[in-house]
Length: 254
Image 1 (tube, rainbow, N blue to C red):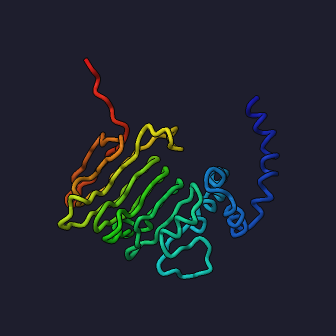
Image 2 (image 1 turned 180 degrees about the vertical axis):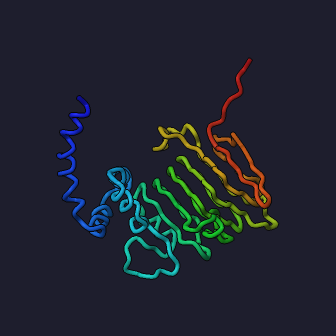
Image 3 (image 1 turned 135 degrees about the vertical axis):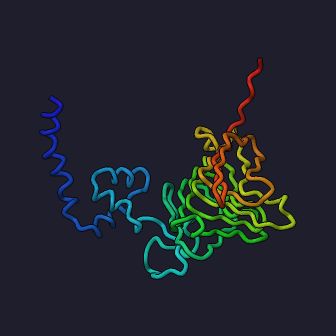
């Protein structure tokens, strides 16, 4: 019965999709560019292999390139701050590999993903100059991946709220006489904040296969969260960390 039902629906589905499939790739990509990345463009990518390729095409991402090859090309920005300002919730920002990109006190209040465009985290470097508190400040659920974030003084990442995922990155605090003021990650989030719009999602930081160098210690928590589930793997030249910053777990009372 189910097979017959699917067989009856197949011509109807094909008839609905065929007019769209008759369009060329450029026209389809232009249509997809008007869709919100999540959930519309995500759902579009599930239709078929061709739509997946077009919906995930780099031209539909926001890109940071320096220098910009074509000033008229949409979605390309000279720096990360401009790309973050233009991003919509759910957007992905791809930062071109090569050279060093400036990132000083960039505040992120919407859920986005920031990815380095190189083969390794070392290929894409964000630098926070001396005199600034942090490179990136997160107030929403975000993900960063494949990036090197370097702070001359202060912290690489300031987490104020939401769920932050740090995957396969390198966080560096440069050595200086004020090392006790430097931290790769600082979290000031309060788990049960009645005024937070993200209280239903909770707050936390998840670190996956990330190298951490310099600073007084890897994480400083000024809120109600605590470091937990720490795991480290030593290689010949580096140490890779996995850990979480989340709600404190009270020890059971016997």
